Amino acid sequence: MGDRGSGHPITEREENHTAMKRHLRLAGLVAGVAIVAAACSTGTASTAPSGAATAAPGASAAPSTSAELAYKGEITYWNTMRDIEAVEVQKQIDAWQALHPGITVKMTLTPFDGADKKYETAANNSVAPDVFRSDVGWTSGFAAQGMLMDLTSAFPAGFGAQFLPAPLATGTYQEKLYGVPQVTDALGLQCNKTLLTTAGLTAPPTSWDELVSAGTKVTDLAAQKYGFYMRGDSYWSQPFIWGWGGTLFTANAEGKVTDIGVNSPESVNGWNYLKDKVLGTVAPATWDFKTDYDNMNAGFKAGTTMCILQGPWAVADILKGAAFTDKANLVIGPVPVGVNGKTGSPVGGHNWVVGVDVGKNADKAAAVANLLQYMTAPEQQAVLAKSLGLLPTNIAAYAVPDVASDPLINQWNAVMAAATNRSGVPGAQGIYDSFTKNYQLFLTGSSTAQVALDATANTWETTVFKNQMAQ
Image (tube, rainbow, N blue to C red; front, side, top):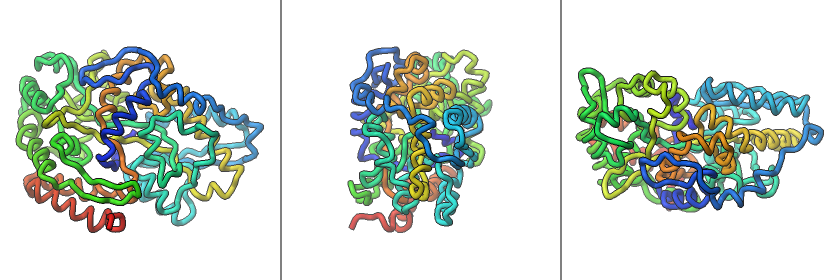
């Protein structure tokens, strides 16, 4: 989840985009459903993917019984999930505790915004929690600073094979495992089917031109009825860079940044398309950036907005809206293409990471590993998928009947297949501060796209990646 709604800043790079799509197709993002490339696909149960077979050994490795766990005491866990999600996770923790008398998991809800800095401060003062729910963009940075336990040998052989390759890669740094994939996600185009019909469409628009053309039929800016709603967060602006052939940055196998391309002519063109063609036409031209996430969701739930860019973490809340009392009215497609069939959506998600000090106590480390095996088992991930709409990282979870038969989860197949993979560059979690500041200057007319993106690139090179630039 990614819970980008409460923040969810995430880092990524583009060089693995093609590999990401290949991995998803090979591993079978859903184990009961074939990956679909068309934006209008809803998916139905099909044959198991090739990746499911290779995942079986790891998936079947059962956690040790309570008698095999020597550790007795407390395991501390900082959870950055929202309340609605944390309730379900607590149920799973309670079930694990019942299997292991004498061990208590103390879960503390930690606001996502600023959680990375809070964890770094705690780790530097040797008071970090035993387990932390880390954004995928933070994991490599924590590992590079020596804050995390190396989990490579903490699990049975084949443990990693049960996970989708893309999220598993986000927990890997310098060929060692530092994060266990908890959930994966990407922004998708979520649309109101009724409004799509009114606009003359039978499925989510596959290009931004189509969205703008159709969206004008349901847009009344004065009445606050929109074909689309944009955000002032740079995370949401990335599709307008990738869709026009731009990039953010490129890194080599050693995790060094070889090129910063965020200010390329292609990126500038994408941002200018957003401002000139979308904003003020089918979406508000100006809005309150501080409240735009809630306002975007509220309008969509109320039925006054045709489409929004949003992630799977928001589905459970969206379905509570008056416009979606019939959940079939929510349809999901990939981010629309810009030019020459280009598109992109940042792969997000979270990893379970373990504090380095846990490794000093072998019994405690074994107990923590057992907990993470339990929490990432197909049955547990399937519960969160069904109840919250979160996308599992465990391939076998997609074969669980409740998940395989869920039409909304199936619709994320095409979204993830077209998404852009993440980077393992330490420090990359810092790209969004300057990115968003300059993006907002562009949106308000205080800066041109070129000037805003040049300023962003300069900050990345001189500050964010100062120690990570390839020589």
